[in-house]
Length: 290
Ligand SMILES: Cc1cc2nc3c(=O)[nH]c(=O)nc-3n(C[C@H](O)[C@H](O)[C@H](O)COP(=O)(O)OP(=O)(O)OC[C@H]3O[C@@H](n4cnc5c(N)ncnc54)[C@H](O)[C@@H]3O)c2cc1C
Picture 1: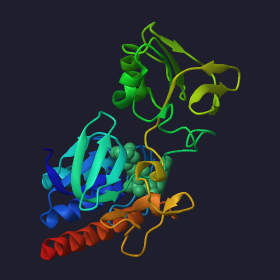
Picture 2 (picture 1 turned 60 degrees about the vertical axis):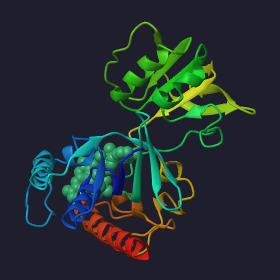
Picture 3 (picture 1 turned 90 degrees about the vertical axis):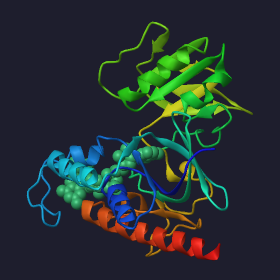
Picture 4 (picture 1 turned 180 degrees about the vertical axis):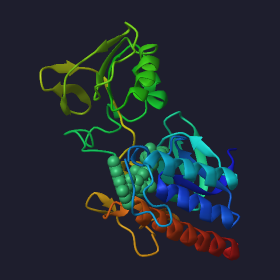
């Protein structure tokens, strides 16, 4: 049986890190999921002038300070990307891109707003030919044809893995960096437009050509919240929350850019703190009920 955490935090930007620190102070058993590089939005900032107490700081230096804080509090980052969160009633089950399953009594979504626009047909065919996880679904395409759309060079590994199982793999990079793939993967330099089919997705329409295939893997840095947590109430592109950072799903909280404008570090960190304290109340309440 897998280990059960008090809280799983999805995202290692200021919102997720702040939530993790507060939960740790409150002696909760936490699972912090994301990247040891924290967030590209921290790393890329040239100079930040509005973070309280740390004036004129480079993003990379602020990231360094965040890492030191985590280290001091003995908080580990689990490098993994969550593809789906299932609300099981009493707890949450989280499935990852590496096909791990994690369990937690509460979940804090702090995944930022990097998911981009969905392709036409993507939502319609999700689970019917469209997948977000090559490691999880590769066996379904044994001896078949698959297309991988990769948002970052990190996704090349997934395409390469898929090529060991599938008969034919096409790879469409959405970035400018050079690709490093074996001859088993056919590179397609084109722009995806839509995924089409009837009962199941069977073709990817690009600007210049159409590729017929059995499976279509769309691999991004993060997935849209509605895909991440089925049944989650949205407010436009953002997760709908109240002032306690509670979502419509009991035990599921959200904070940071993903819950709305303004997109700011200090707002994200503040909301992470609120989400964590709300999760503490929720967890303590649950304990009393038992
Ligand atoms: C160039 C630039 C400069 C900026 N300058 C400023 C500034 O000066 N002042 C200011 O206040 N704000 C600034 N911002 C805005 C600020 O960066 C954001 O508001 C802030 O980073 C949001 O924090 P967050 O924690 O909500 O999300 P993010 O920082 O976006 O972090 C989200 C994290 O979650 C991870 N993640 C996403 N999905 C998953 C998943 N499914 N599983 C696991 N992990 C996942 C991501 O990889 C990422 O690490 C700037 C932004 C940019 C891009």
